[in-house]
Length: 212
Length: 212
DNA sequence: GTCTATATTTCGATAGAC
DNA sequence: GTCTATCGAAATATAGAC
Image (cartoon, rainbow over all chains, first blue to last red):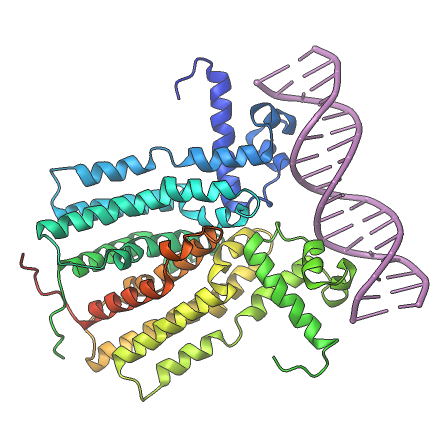
């Protein structure tokens, strides 16, 4: 994305950044071009100089938002200096980071809202972001199982066990954003550490029968 | 659905049923009173005979939607004929049923959208539905641990490991509702069975070190 | 590229007949 | 209880000056 004119390109990126946040927070129908313009500090008509319609702006927010997000996970998978458990720890830390500190973790319901109106964004987002994230993490686990580092596990079940709690946590925290006790109800660090430990425990092998 | 006066009382329930589905599918702002009336087959003005405003209708959809949903889980917890593993199996089957066959599993983002405008619905839904569901399942696990049936586990981590994949699955399936290969991407039965097995494996006890 | 001003449609909500 | 008709506000989008 190299550009000559910073005044022009930066404005477009600024609109996309604000727009993504607004769409994720208030939904597609709940985000008005007037509100968005006011948040950025420009006039409504100026938005239409950069994007021909609200729909085009939305598509840009969804499809340009996850560029580069998969590459960090790919790098963790390919890093030869990591042990297999440390690779899982690093991957889960990155999954938590991307889902809890960027809007992407709250995009699923937004896509669902818009899918009947703009069907292609659902495929673009799913194939370009979700499916690739799943594939990288599933791949690094089956790699480790093949090397004998981990016990065999059903990849489909484990994939949902890894991503499900993170995405639900992002949505739960947004739902409770106004609660004064939100961080006590959904403490990110504690949940992430416990989650990671439990996943590694499953990968370590089948259970030894519990003796009361 | 028992019907005494099909003209009057059922109309209110009919509006709430259609409204809940529309709100969950298209968001609060994305659901218009005109569309809702058309879906039911009445005129827009008739909606305002049963509810004074769109906001009042929405609050009714959220607060009346989860009545009785917790009682089935409570019954499973209290059932003396179940073994502890079977109790977990029954509870997870019920969690999957409620989240995947009723709109409640897709309500979190809807609540998040509306929370800035109607703050009280977030607390009502969280305290009345989510927190109680969490408490029942966490309680039946700590009960079993106290009886010696299961190994000790961090209840917070396990709670997210149980509910997270289910809620994310409900959202993923809605996001991909238009995909012809949705059931292949997100096969409910396979995921539920694998998920349940992995949870029971964690509860069975600490891992035996894996030997390649 | 950004602005003011405006066209057009759709929204939530109300009035009043039946 | 449901209808037709309509209001005022807010939405998307456009026209044209600077």
